[in-house]
Image: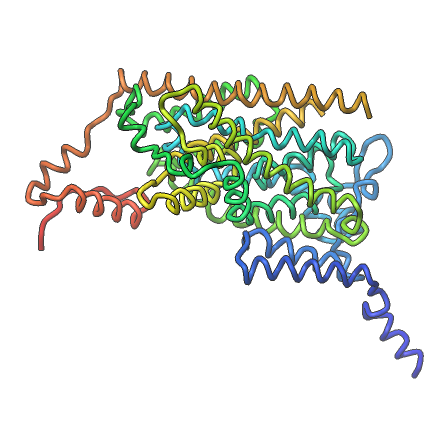
Length: 401
Length: 86
């Protein structure tokens, strides 16, 4: 009888629950709470949170194992059947869809099909502020070296400052896959906190006069040289031309940027490719998001997550975000010194990605100071260029680090 | 650490310059495409056509609202042929 109870106890996971397991459950519950109740990036935080939970059920065999476990001799790896057999289906998903770098570009294709380059094409000079706002990526990379991260880990940490989830995940997969969980969590959490971080940084760096700069008034005073007569044609040619030039100059950014531009092209062509566009933004993107979220969450086992490096990533990620926003604002302020046609520095603050939330937040902030000052379309210009900028920065990091 | 830091600073310089160059190219490419399309493919002025077809409706704001509503409901596939007051 006692033997039966003993075997019954062994069948359950009760004996394997440790203090660390409970901490990971609490972290999973917090992520699920933020996603479900607070609606912070629920499409990503809910799958990631549940992935954390799955990975930390003792005996469920759902946690992602380090790559040494699947590595054979001479740089060869176990095949997917062996991985599924030895380590379960979550490792099968991770090593086939995430470790290969497959899903982030697929999500980027959907993002491209949801993106409208129109605001950027109408205000092309604002694209430069998407470059200035990438400074947080590289600054935090230097700080991370001081904190004891290796160069590859520092680059993965810095890319959080690009405020682009798929870019952060893709770069981390390429450079420091063991940090994927904490970096993905930090990236998406701070993206969800954009409504808090942008006002915080903007109010620190800007005065009331700058908040009330009206972009529309400036456009009336100093109208743009060229009006677009055929926006549809411009929007179709633009992704093809840009993709070609970027592919020649920064080929390592092509998996992300190329898929973004392809997604955008099928959207802009219109009716004849609308089925492709609908697939990219609907079933494909949704499926990719589920698998990406669950598999990234499953990388966060207690052994990997409960380390001092995670704390460094959380702090470093916030600093990267704040510096990127500051970089954009300060770049506009410098520009305003030399130009008669002033730009609202909030446009610079949206130079980091986080499309379109950053633009919405900046617009609401401008409206608080002047209820007639709608700057959304101008913010979208630098916001979209920020997506291109962060993908290029990721390409540079992957190539050089 | 010193060597590492030196490398990272060079990566920062190269990275920021590359990002600026690419976005500068975005501006150049955009402007070139706009100029070429303006010159060779100026397109049809759809707004004028719609206005002549809907001369009974004086408010351009109402027309814009109807066009936007049809665009959203039909996912950009629908076109307005005629607008009449009921």
